[in-house]
Length: 326
Length: 244
Figure 1 (cartoon, rainbow over the protein chains, first blue to last red):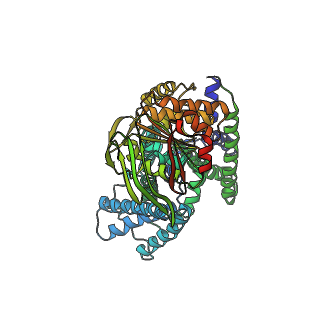
Figure 2: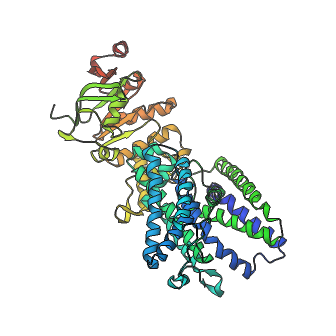
Figure 3: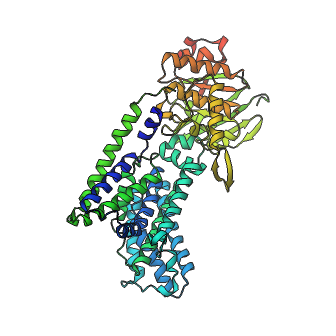
């Protein structure tokens, strides 16, 4: 029993989960019972997958010991690529494939440059943030192209499904992808390599893990998840705006950190990233419902990030200090 | 090259950006032998070991494993040839469990596709428990984090890992650094027991007493060259000290 308590105290996502429960409770009261209502949940769950998918990718990459600031720009670039190709007469699926391929390429370049020249990924991906954003505007030609909605199987992404039409199809994509990444990280040899690479690089190298390839694979996955999330948002909005996803990279990092992911790599979980993303969405939504001035949103996210990390460190320390007989 | 040697190196040279770190080293390591490799910082011990364990490649010279010319381009090649290296700090990931650490890079899989597959966690836990018991180490569950173990226990797990994968040659790079007296005795015991397990040990240390306590042969290096290579009966601590 005590061992179980010790293990759960050391779980990185515990602090975020507790905060989430508390906030949901608070907002439920301050919104006069509206927060957990069917209509509000429907709206919340409709938005959630877009940012949560980005957070899942960023979390994976951070566990691997690297960083990606370009996700917000890739978020806009992927759907723009698709839209421009479709205006040129491409069908939906090939256009999406090229867009996703473009994301994979950006992830590859991020990883390759970081490793080949031994520079911090913070710098590589900061550069990519500007480059990818600029490319988005350039290929749009200054005017967002019109989405040919009649050629797009929108229902596969944004139609309301589930019991009582509670969530959108995008939510199913998100759950499926998050489960897949969590499985990859927790149950496969690749996941073991990711954690070892981020946890202690010299040991991973000495044990013969292809650390460069592992990192590049994580960069590519991260970029592709960001691009896919962008696609979902554009389909929901019905128009590929070149400005979407600005600031998203920092929110995604905040989500990962709130969820217990360490900036130094090795520690973290997909579930944590998802909880972190959910917390940010809950704050956004809950503050509006509670009629708080929305300019406080960023303040709340910032305060929450710090609070979560402090709480996490404290809980983990308590967990570690617990003596268990075995 | 003597045919009975398990590892032979011939005329190894290595330069690090202008520094000539290894100057034509030739050595033979015989099966079942415990060799102590001593020398001051910068003597070339680590360079030699890094070449054998695949972290670096020699600029010139050849390595033979069991009489066959070997090309060791990365740590994986070395492990596949049966050469396991236990480093002072960096052979374990502290934030991962014992079972996970035991099998890093060599995970047993229940199903795999293109090299990526599902971990056989039951097997990993069971075999780590067995491997640890085999080296006489008493540890709690295989789920304990390596970061929570003492330095000696970590070395024990690293040695258990090397034994589990049936290495022929075990290189121990400063395994007694920062260990308590009791733990040091234990590590020296491990090195002694390698012989019974049919494993060649190469033991690198600053501490002459540790080396003399468990090795059959002493190799001393200075400034990239071998300056002494004698069975332990034909030399003593003072002679080796004077050469360094």
